[in-house]
Structures are given as C-alpha cells and as structure tokens.
Image (cartoon, helix red, strand yellow):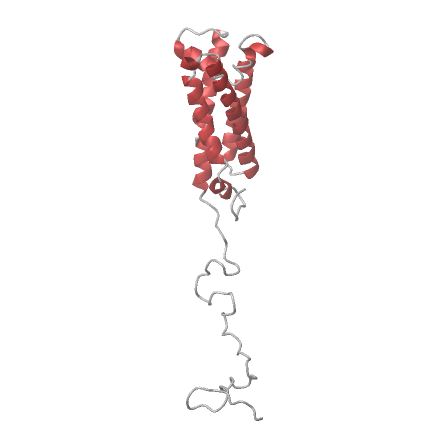
Length: 209
C-alpha cells in the first residue's frame, strides 16, 4: 500500500517551508529584548514576568500613622497612673474612679499588694515602655513594630479579663472608661500588625509578616 496522502492548504503540496537556516519545526531566536516570559525592552514588566516585584514598599506614612495611634493610649495610661499615685487609690469623682479601674492590673491588684500600688506601677511601666517603642517606631524598625504589637496584645488581653471581671462583679456601670481604654489599645495594636505597616519598615520589599 502506498503512503497516505496528507492534506495541505490549497496551493501547497508539502509542509510549510521552514525559516531559512533552521530545520523544520525549529523556531528562530527571539528578537533582542524579547524572550519567553520576559517583557519587551522599553516596556514595563507585568505581574508574572520574572523580575517584577510582587508588591513594593509601602509609604513610610503608614508606619508614622500606626505609631501615632498609640499616643492616646499612652496618655490615658499616664493620666490613670497619676491619679492613682496622687490619690493613693481614692477618687473624688466618678471619672477619677473610672481612671483607677482602667489601670493595667487594677482587677488583680488586691490579690498582689492589697492596694492600688501594683496597678500604678504596672501601668507606669507599660506606658513608659510603649512610649519608647512608639518613638522608636518612627525609625521604621520591624523589630520595634513586633515588640509594640506584642505589648499591645498583652495589654488588650488584660483589658478583656478586666471587663469580664467588672461584669461578673455587677460593676458594669463602672466599665465605661475601662472599655474606652480597651479600644484605645486595641485599634493601634491591630493596625501596627497589619501587612501594609510591615511593608513600610526599612529594608522591606515583600509583604510584611
């Protein structure tokens, strides 16, 4: 039997002519600046091409905003510690009493020292440490960001306990200022741990972790 005839487009009696100098099936080299998976020369790279950054460094303003959000919480902590230190655990108004309850450690201070001194010392320490970390965060150091986020998580966890404690002790009417303080710590803590803030740190070229 003869070889079966192959069909070719009308007017052709054989396979298409290969490019001059290349065997059938081979392809000529790509023009300069153009190769598989690489954007043409003179054109911006597109996502998926090698060498294209997945995400650039975020604006430094993101880090500055995250640092500034901690300022109200730090000021509130210093105010509460001052009231507790000057008054010795006594309050002349409902507002001052609310500040005493908003101290870090106020819900457990009676088990430790029996007075407000433990809460005052703890709050002062937290406020000073947070203040230093906030100032250092303006230098956009990722280690500082993580330390500040970790401190914020500890403080937020305490306030969750303190609010639950006040509610279980039928003191929910006194929980307003502690609740505000809880929010003042929660918002900046969440913000400082967001990936865009991580990308705003010095030396970061990929999404922050």
